Length: 424
Image 1 (tube, one colour):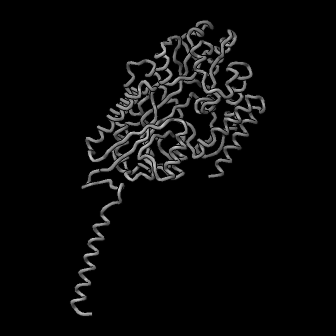
Image 2: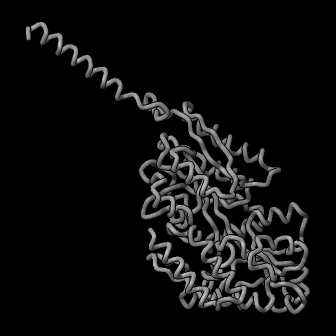
Image 3: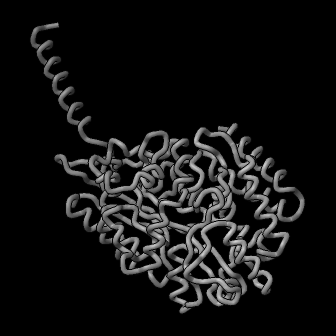
């Protein structure tokens, strides 16, 4: 080959290398995160109806404010909020992610987090968030959004299930608003008197989530469902006590006959048929909106431990997001003190940030709820947490129908849980 041809070939190769290098610096369409060091692109956020329909416009305003605040620092990122219903949300999210679709940010709760993380559909945020005022979150809040030492989200809300009592019934049975029960023993002494007067002692919505029905009883008795080491303990002696207590309530008529599978006893409470029921911030808001004043708020109860269910809602980033860094920064903005305060003030949840803890200083009931966050557990933190719910529920229903003893129901539930774990 002549010298001139060698020179031409070398020049051509160099030119092709330059073109290749330039091309490799351009991300594929839809994957661009930065332009000249700035975040860019589009972020889709899936949210839920956290408020009643008459407050939907105000909820939209809260989210729009979050996006506007974010755009002050990141003007090249477009943020779109899309609302999906609560019903079947787990399946809808997993189906979308499996199809490599779905949002860049979505809402999750702790007992779903383990499953999602194990399926590999969540992005660990530990290294993406940078400084997020970690010290402003109580340790319990961060534990609720952490799985296997990885931070998967930032909390936006806390929920507490406490108790409300019908004050007319309370007075009728000789109780006092100033001395509400804190233990099972104190509660059952009052409840027995209410039943003698022809009322039901409490609600039990057996068709509802176990987080709001059986689980708090198990925790209060000193038991658990799956312990921290992954061992199934729902049929331990302490856990079985909760099954036995529930079974006695049902057999003795302390809870309504439809408690096996109903999902709504709140109407019966409003009608003055039930002495006590569970209550969240939304419950209190509903009572006030309906101008129902014959109630008083009481703390979570204790047998061996004073505990109740209280979820921690978080925003997370899926592993298939093509804009993970921007998504992580958006979550920081959505959960900062100002936006967390605005969101929780509207929805009547409790802000996880200590800097927002004064939100309810002028609301005595919600201030109590805020103080009771320390008594909450966020459910079962395990990859099978959601899968075992219907299986345990079926055993509880069989017990209440008289087909199984409390110990038999607990043993069958333990076997069903272990079967699910063995599938992992």
